[in-house]
Length: 292
Image: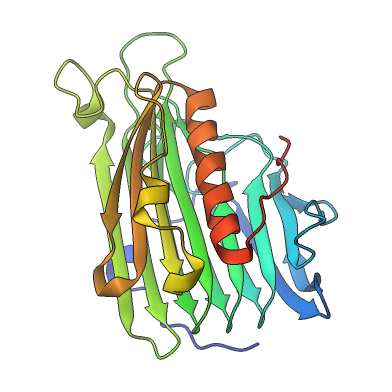
């Protein structure tokens, strides 16, 4: 499986010098289909990333392999540069999630950076559903995701964050940037989604998220006959615990789902429900519960 990716555009670069002790971490994983099952191919994992053995959790879906992308560092720190790449071969299927939420510590004006590259071959399936970022006062983070999908492939992307001020001093996080680009196998842009928000914009009575504690964004992209319908998605959420909005993505690419949740449990519930809908639409079977 090979692909040619463009260099990140200049506006994604960070001109400031590296901080002493800042970390470069790399997580590379390829999945390939052999018979009815998906297996790990090439892998490369460097600190602070960690990966245990993969899990075949779904007896009725032997092609779906689950991997927990773990960290041994206690969160994201200033000027971290962490990158991931996922290659999923023809007919292979993977679910990549985290062991828990990721804390983003005070970055003192030097944001942490995460970049993710995804390549899905024909008929491949990938659900990349990390638990939310927990943004402490002064936290700053930039997340860039680039994906390329061949015909028949399905991709579920999850991006969520929560605010946390442990000393209740009304100190917001600094900023959060999240940029995602999804292209077809020929490089044609299907979807571009950008979030750029300062913590101060979410503080006080004028906050657009109100009293909700967790903000989640999902994109479900790929072959229309392997995606849930809008009526199925409309059943997501419970009025007192979550509110969700569903949007048809441009170029007939799939669905976008935005969600506000009352707490981490409510946010996890809607993420799990959406994952289950995606798996049923793609494979015709309910997935097993993923334990955290």
